[in-house]
Length: 145
Image (cartoon, rainbow, N blue to C red):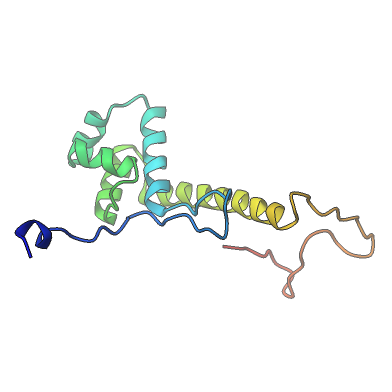
């Protein structure tokens, strides 16, 4: 066996490959993409550069760029520093990313339902005897992940 052959490694993709069972569906969003999107959107909304925010957060500009693009899975310390540099708390960043995840999951769920129904959405008529929407036994709000 040659040295060249022994130096080759198997490549494992960091992003999940699309499944053949669900063609046409948007891919499952990754947390690092959502958090990076929130940081970039907030930085741009403030009209600030990567250099300004990375300097204030005391992290490298290259690393912050990688985090914003969803290429790096940042530690909680790095996320907290970037959030603070943007005038946000870590909770703010995570809440905004969570809201985006819920919105993308709803779109994905609707697309899956539509594909399963042959592209047609079922029509539901209102029944005056039943309240609209799902009811929980405790009378509270049902949340889906």
